[in-house]
Image (cartoon, rainbow, N blue to C red; front, top):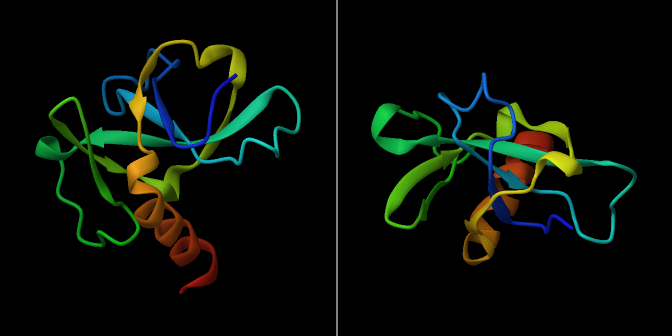
Length: 105
């Protein structure tokens, strides 16, 4: 089972170059079928993000990424098979980005 705030290798080969990883944002208890809500991660060195609040910077295995919350999508959970790490330590930043995206707070 894919877990909230865990990162996985992007299962979409065409999107993997721009967004090598995705992070599950959906709560574990809100599984709702075969899909999970994820946000793509872009390598921080390859991108300039003016509104950092919408795209918090995180790190996995020494590489910096921006979590692009504005590009959230539902993906089949069956494709989330290659774990890349946990972003649970960034929970506050991720929740703040989602709150800002949807509620403006």
